[in-house]
Each structure stands twice: as C-alpha cells, then as structure tokens.
Length: 235
Length: 293
Ligand SMILES: Nc1ncnc2c1ncn2[C@@H]1O[C@H](COP(=O)(O)OP(=O)(O)O)[C@@H](O)[C@H]1O
Ligand SMILES: [Mg+2]
Image (cartoon, rainbow over the protein chains, first blue to last red):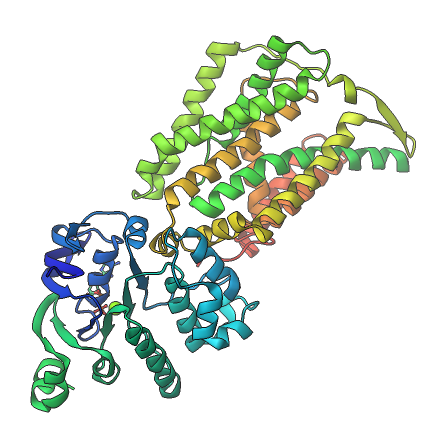
C-alpha cells in the first residue's frame, strides 16, 4: 500500500543556508504523525517544502504516489493538502467571516466543510464573525486559522505548532477539537516542540535534529520510555 | 479678489485633482497588491492619450466617437499592461526591488520612443464630445460641461472601487492578496492571475485618465514623465497603497496647484514639493497610509 504522503531524502535551503539534510518520512491515510524537535531543527521548513512554499533542492515528495515536488502552493492545496502555519497568518484587516469566505472561494475543492460546519466545530467563531481577524485573541486566531484551512476540504492537514503561545486551558480545548477531526478520519501531520500535546494526538513520531530524522517510531514508545524521551529531546 | 474668481480656481483645482486621482489610484492599487512601484504608469497614461487620439481619427469626432475612443484606449492600455506583467515583470518578483524599478524605468524609455516613432513629436489634440461641448454658468463663472463630468466621475469611480473592494467576493480576495500573498496561495489561490488582473485594472485606470484628459490639454511627448512625478507626489501625500489616501492626496495636490499659482507663478510646484517633503519627514507612510510592517 502506498502512503498518502511520502518524503524521500528531501534537502531544502534558504538561499545559501541549508536547513534540511535528507528528510524522509511517510504518512498513511487516517494517521496522525508528529514531527518533534526543538526550535530551529527544520519542522516548519519540512512543511513549507511539502506545501511548495520553499522548493526542495533535492529529493522527492509523493502525494498519493504522484510526484508533486516543485508544484506551486495553490496546486498542492488543490490536490488536498491544507497548511496551518505556526504564526497563524490571519488576514488581519478582514473579519472572521471574510477570512473564511476568501478561503472558501479560492479553494477548488468542495466537501463537507462549509462556513456553517466550521462554526459548528468552533462555535466561538460564529460570535466573532464580524470582528477583524487582527483583533482576535491568540486562541481565537488559532481556531480561525484551522477553520480557514478546513474550508479547502483537505485530506491531509499540516498543523505547525498549534499550541504555541496559548494558555493551558485554551490548549486543552484545541486538543479536544483536533482529536475530533482525527476521529472523523482527517490525516494529520503535526509539528510540536513539546511532548504533551503531540503524544496526546500522535500515532507515530519523527524526532528531527539539525534538519534530519534522528528517531522514528510509534508515539507509545516515547510515551512509555522517559529515558528515551530525555535522550532525544532533553526534556 | 472676487469670490467668483476664487470659486473658479477651486473648480479648476478639483478637475485637475480628479485626473490625478484616476492616474494615482491605479499606481496605488498596483503597489498595494503587487508591491511593485510602476514607473511606467505615466507611460500607460500617455499611451491612453495617443490611442484615444488615434481611435478618434479612425471613427471620426462626430457623434459619440470620443467615448468609444476613451473606452478603447483604456482597454488597449489595460491589455498591454497585463501582457507586460504576465510575460516580463513576473520574472522579477523573486529578485530585489531594484530590478523591478529598473525594468519599469526601461519601459518608460521604450514606450516614449514607440510613441515618438508612431505619433511624432508634435502636439495633438482631441475635441470635446458633442454631448458635453456646452457649458453652464455657476456662481458667476463659466464651467464647461466636460469639466463637471470629470469632477463627478472621480468620486464615482472612487466609490465604485471602494465598494468593489469592500463588499464583493473578488474584492475580499484582492485585499487578502495584498495582506499575505503566500498564505493566500497556500489556501489554493492562483495569486499569479490575481496579480495580472490587478495590473490590468491599474493600467486601465491610467489609460482612461490619459484618454479623458485629451479634450482639456494637448498630447505631447514628455507628458508621461510629468504625470508620473505628480502621481508619485499624490500617493506619497495620501499614503501609498491607501485608497482614500490617494483620493485625499489628489484633492490636496489639485487645490495647492490652483491657489499656489496666485502667490506667484511657479510657487505651486514649490508648495506641493514642500508639502511632500514635510509629509515624508513627519509621516513617511502618508496621511491615510499605514507604516509598512
Ligand atoms: N526564511 C528563512 N531564511 C533563512 N533561514 C531560515 C528561514 N526560515 C528558517 N530559517 C532557518 O532554518 C532553520 C530551521 O527553521 P525552521 O524550519 O523554522 O525550524 P522549526 O520549525 O523546527 O523551528 C533555522 O535555523 C532557521 O533559522
Ligand atoms: Mg517552526
């Protein structure tokens, strides 16, 4: 069986600074896979490479077995990959509703996710429909950025550090919503620095270090083995 | 000074302001979305004027041929602008901004030569359309119908564009593209075509401005450079990329020109330059603009 997403020996640079040194990974349909690693190891760059935002210098990215390396971002999105960036990237001068409406219009994929459906997933957004995105709290912006990406009805969601900078209570609410998405069958590739959030969600993990995969295995292995966790992440 | 004389100056300033708004709004729109400062915008304005003259030559000045010419000229310039963006300019987005400036400056030189070769270096003129060739008496002065039409057209176009940007789906997508093009593309938008579309619209406004100005002033080589300087001053005063800022900047510029000339000839241009310099120092992002993030 071919994986939904597969990276083979991906090398990516920003100008002359090389960041990824041959990252290989697989994500199967329905799985939640976590990229774990400290700040600066290349998690975001891996996601940008998949999305076509930064084209890899070498290596191959396969989506449902098809080579999508070098595709422009809008075609990657239309093929079914949704990107939720770590800095959220809300259109600050557009209202919540306008953010969602724009996403719906530029998405070429129709499916179960409509504005009403994402309002049901995050009822808070319905109350904030007319508020400019720039005036939402961090947690509200995180809900909006996930909701906005869902408007494209993706099969795979790239979630870059969704818990970053949020209060613990907000993180718990968010975790519960993402678990719901997972149970509904959405495939997720998550990037995280901490183990709490990621191990609550992930089936498998890849630990990144200096732009390469240092460890890969079931999330349970890290969950049960404090010594391994310590060795890999110094946590 | 007679009040009617001052009123006449005011109306003159208003007419000039509306032409400036037509041109500067296109410049500002293109900068707002593409972040490209298009030096050739004034050349598009000049081409609009020459094309309008040419079409009037073909269809004849009788009847409403002028309107056909204005629309045809604006469309022609818009198509040229879109083609230049699509075929040439887009290859420079990844480069430094300096390359884009040099490229649009090169366009200025090329288009000026094209115009000279095609239409010569003499003055050309176009008469007012018969439907607006009359005039009316207003508070003791004679106002051509055509000038009134321009004074009404400016705010109409401003309002239409503002409503399109704020209230329509396409407007929302364009605003999103101006705020974060990379994010918009990751959501599935082909931002390249949005850019081409904005270049089309911005060039259309330049071409329309050039075509509509022909009944009020003669077409001469050099009008491209003169107008781009004025348009830059307008957007610097109002705030580059700010829609109403451009409108306000044009109004201020027009009035300073109209009343500055009463001090002594040549004072107007000094006054607008001084105004621009002051704004650059105390509020570099313009009256209604926003500091660049
Ligand atoms: N736009 C960029 N230009 C140059 N270097 C970058 C850029 N973005 C990230 N980097 C560098 O690439 C490395 C990996 O960054 P990133 O992928 O963001 O890591 P992570 O998401 O794991 O924190 C870091 O050393 C960072 O400084
Ligand atoms: Mg990151």
